[in-house]
Amino acid sequence: MESPFGFETLFHLGPVPISRAVVTTWGIMAALVLISWLGLRRARPDGGPVQTVLEILVGTIEDQIRAILQRDPGPYLPLLGTLFLFVVSANLSAILPGVKAPTSRIETPAALGLIVFLSIHWFGLKVQGLGGYLGHFLKPNPFLLPLTLLSEFTRILSLMVRLFGNMMSHELILAILIYLAGFILPVPFMLLGVLIGVIQAYIFTILATVYIGAAVGAVET
Amino acid sequence: MTIDWWTLGLQAVNFAVLVWLLRRFLYAPVRKVIAERKAQVDAAQTEAATAKAAAEAEAARLKAAQAALEASRAGVLADAAAEAETATKASATQARAAADAMLAKAQVAIASERKAAVAGAQVELAGLAAGLAGRILQDTAAKVAPGVFLDGLAGALTALPADERDRLAADMAAPGAVATVVTARPLTPDDHPVWSARLMPLLGGAGTLAFAEDAAILGGAELRLAHSVLKFGWADRIAAAQGVLTGDE
Image 1: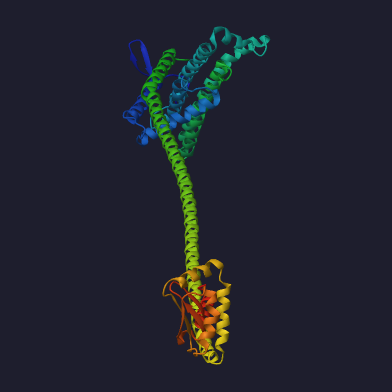
Image 2: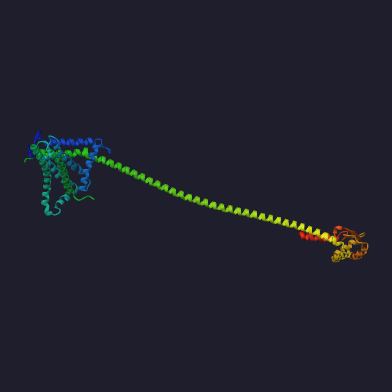
């Protein structure tokens, strides 16, 4: 069994090693873009079933973002919606035979955590301005600044590790069960993995939204 | 534990690219479609609101027209009622006037008929009374002495006004003047001088006195001169009485 902390290089593009997780990610990206393009290439108000499903999906994500941020979800939808769709797709990709979830490798959650970390500060600076955004670190008490700064990193670290730990452990348990009991017993655990994958994607996206919401500050009136 | 920084960087780039791709192929079309649908719904709502407003305006107009119609109907009914009342009153007045006219005409006719009937009855009664009186007097005259008639005639001459008697005397003074005494029954020759002696002085003493009979005078006597007649006959008295009874005098 391959170590979850190791990396499997499939090929090299020049000096750049291309791992299995990257290739799987490319496949997920292609699938998401293809589905979106097929479903919405002739988008019209009375669209077909695929368009309707996509509209419901996007509308639901928008509603969630609006409910948390209490703001127009437009500027945040591409990042947070893509975060959810990608994490769900990456988590559930393990169902496919021979495919390993990119999120079960530390690099993918780390990359997502890095992007969320940068996005938090980007939106915070964009909405509150430099002074306002830096000022919010001093609240509620300037003496808590070190802890506040530390939490900026630890919460992203926990976000990343939570996703990685859940998906890696699920994959590890599934591998052990297959090794011990063959292919029938792990089926319930695979179904459980679907649930875990969706929940983890939801948690990851919601927490990212909450962090961004805290950065952009008070509710618009 | 080792981290493949290349993979980490590639995954970050991959995610960034995916954000851009989905923004182009998923979020933008969906938001565009939703915006179009919302615009359609808004347009439909606006159209519905416009139609509703138009319907309400039309309903209000119809209601106003109905109210005006009701008012007009009430006015027409009131006018018709007033006209009918006026016409009824006029008809009643006209009918009453016609009835009054007919009644007055009938009353006039009744009065005229009654008057004519009364007049006819008076004439008939007067004629009957005159006839009866004439027959009674005709029988009575035979039993009355002529001297009574002479006294009456002489009294009548005496009662004449002086100028009348002068005119009678002038008539008798004319040459050949004759005054005729007419009685119902002939006077006896013995009566002639008595009558002459009594009447001639009253006539101025000139002329001649003649005697004649006329049963039509029933009784009494008449003195007929050239230009006048002094009547003291009973027939004239009965005729005068009949005239009084019939209202001619």
